[in-house]
Length: 118
Length: 115
Image (cartoon, rainbow over all chains, first blue to last red; front, top):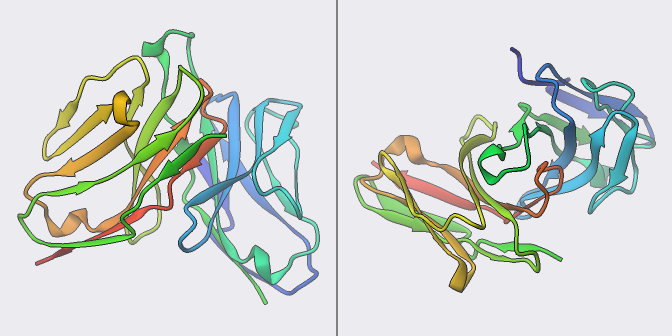
């Protein structure tokens, strides 16, 4: 089990360029999310998905697109990179077996992608 | 809307001292889930503990302990006999969803253990 894998680990973009941050999990988790971490602001939710074909916006979705065509993959697309998108990006996945309190689990995080937009 | 407040931005203690990291949360839901994550200098997020709103039992795991009090909406984390390896940023997080797809994080507390 690799868990949650994010690629690339580091990326430098020029303003206006587009790119896709990859996130893959091999745990068959239904729920996946993208967060960005900025100094002094903790992690903020960008987009999330509750299953293949279902995505929704989080707190800071502007400038980002997502899709969930398979259970395993949840790529994050930057449409036209801006310096304000310089950040560390984390992908997370989660699941539950049943609905009892004892079945609740934690969110599993990838190693992060450090993105710099110049 | 839910909110998590970690009022302590940075804490420094001398090794072997005890230290408590505070976490106060706000939610309108009666069912919710609380977490602590550790982010060491290497940058990954390490899961420490989860708690659901029905379970107010305190928990101890080695040198770590957690105090969950619904009456004060707090979920505090204590490290006993701190060690240099405990130096990290610690995040408290809240989920109102069983699937954890929408976590709300505090801004984190940077803990430095001075040898």
